Length: 135
Image 1 (spheres, rainbow, N blue to C red):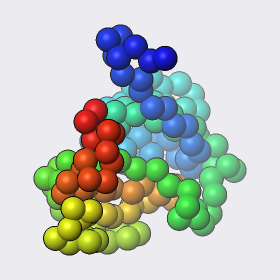
Image 2 (image 1 turned 30 degrees about the horizontal axis):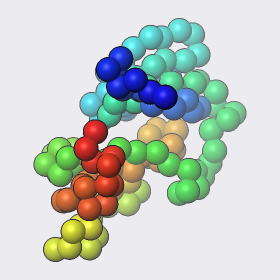
Image 3 (image 1 turned 180 degrees about the vertical axis):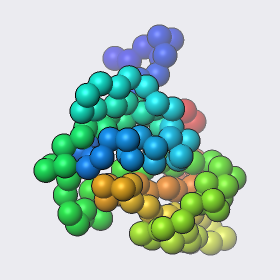
Image 4 (image 1 turned 90 degrees about the vertical axis):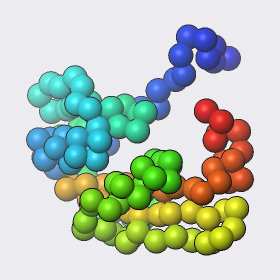
C-alpha cells in the first residue's frame, strides 16, 4: 500500500526520440524541468511525471498510432493558456460536450520525434475523474 504521508508516487514514462537536444527543448517549452542527463538519455519533470527521453531513433514509430499517446489533464485556465501559445496541432484545441458536467477541452501535439501528447481539461473534473480529481 502507498503511504501518502511519505509523498505521492511519481509516474515515470520512458520513450524513444530521434534527437535528444531537440526533445528536451520541446518538453521544457511545454513547462518541463530538465533533470538528469547522460549520453543517450535525459529526464524531464513534466506535469508531475518523470519523462525519460531515450535517444534511440531506430525505436521511434513512424507514423505514431493515435492510440499510443500520453498526456496530462490540466486545470481549465492552465489548459487555455498552454494551447493558446502552442501551434502545430495534430488535433486542434476544441471543446467536447459543452455546457454539460462532462465538458472537456482537448488538443493533441507531437514532439519532434512524432510522439503524441494529449492536453486535456475538464470544467468539472470530479464529474469525470471521480476520486482522481481530489488528488
